Amino acid sequence: WMCGACGNHNFASRQACNKCQGPRTDGGCGGGYGPVTTMGLAAAAGVSPYGRVAPAGGQMFQQPGLQQQHAADIKDGDWMCPSCSNHNFASRVNCNKCSALREGMKDGDWVCRACKHHCFAKTVQCFRCQ
Image 1 (cartoon, rainbow, N blue to C red):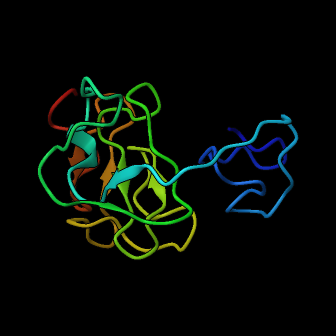
Image 2 (cartoon, helix red, strand yellow):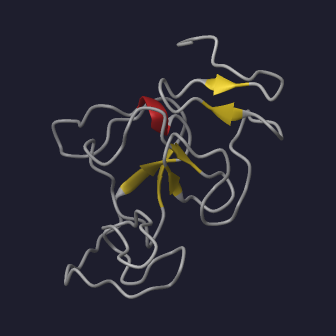
């Protein structure tokens, strides 16, 4: 669900926003301990016949309090923060919950808004799409 106060994308199991602690206002409720990929989330594009996100390399584990992500919720390039397990959109360089730097990124690196390519700090244009 999307927080009405700050626009943060939250797992269905949360009753308060994990960014601003605003209350859930859509009346929904979530639950369960679905599997979550901690690595390789960007490649998770399909859903297995059992309705769970298919592993995309990396480890699968169950962590209480985290809701299973559906393929429609996970976009290409999205990533899980290695520090706090927060689901981050591809365009983010830092985790929107704990501010940890995305793995593989260095200070000043950026993500192209058009093609989602990781660009180095020294570049001013994306070499992939510009």
